[in-house]
Length: 112
Image (cartoon, rainbow, N blue to C red; front, top):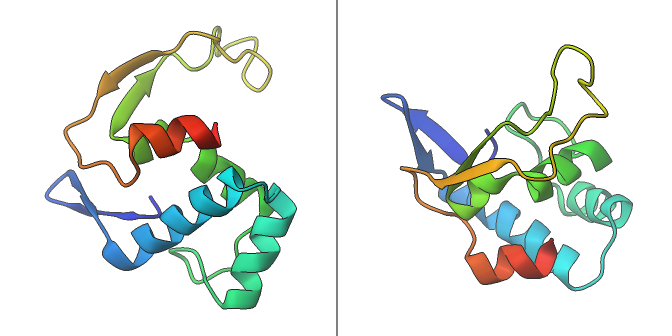
């Protein structure tokens, strides 16, 4: 997962990648759209964990992931068998994770 390394089955913040995650949330909360964010990251030379350029979907996935806020979520999809892509649960279960948050609750709320 971008922004974290897995060490002994635990998520540990990767400082270099965490800077990019913070930049994404900062720029998004200041009005940049997903395409503009992806282009900004490409021009600045940032790459994903797999040394690829950031895509619009990649940026959206980072912004939509509660892991960066120090939480874990379950039951994001209402019925996986019939509604895999369209059945987002409006009330997934959110719990505090055992990992350190990359962004604060305040930054997460502003961005989302």
